Image (cartoon, rainbow, N blue to C red):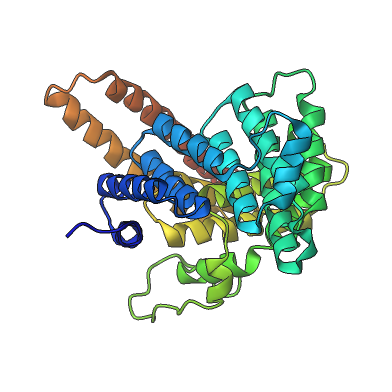
Length: 397
């Protein structure tokens, strides 16, 4: 028997094949449209279908589906400004949230000026929403405003960075994000710290990224303990202790609330850049304790990523950099993690060489080989600097 729209939507939620999901959501949307069974449910089906299209690389199809969904909701797509504001004010919280979300998603799937137009549309809907009378809805609108302004700021730091007013617009967007900061997520603070570094204002960036880290440190530290890099339980030696029981994960709620992998990786990189600035011999405000605070924070954040996925070479490399950033440097721990990064890079290199031996002439392979060789040289240089420093210390002794 043929399934109705609700049955298709329920089945699509548990389906693992994205192509079958797309077919289910598309069919459900067609049935809902034919039955005129409610714009919110229809738009939601279109939004879920768009997400599946992105997962299979069909971004153009996803954009078309999202634009159609916005048209179905009838929020934020009027030409007349007064009518547009009136429609937004009259719309339900669910429709406002969905329509703005569609526009912001369109911004993520677009570049430069097109992305800017979509982001501004999504922000406009949120700003004109009258859902702010309900406390919970108002809080959710603020969270969305914060996230949307952070996305807008990132656009001005990347695609639109050469626009004459890019820096001004970027800072204005971040300030709007901070105005809607909920005191929990670190997005707006991290965006401001990143901007200050790009403005060559590292002294201003340090306290800001430290505040951002404070919001995620409980979850990061809990995961760091799982991989033996917690502040309190880090051992002097780095040999594996097979008899030691595996530590149990604590602070599960904080761990589950952590931002994504890429966000935390960027957090660590900003912390390392701040540590490098603070340890600069020419820095008149050099403070060893502040350097080590930034380095330790970077270790905790990176260790949380290692606990999540220990096969990302960059994370092993960056943890080595973090231990090397301490004053004095923790050379043993730095060497351990750089050695692991080098071993992983050499395996990747060997794999590419094997493919080339079997006649694979893909240009991408040659490009990958060049990148891998450059990364191997960089890690070897880091390891060489540790050896050199150790030799110099022995000579001085």
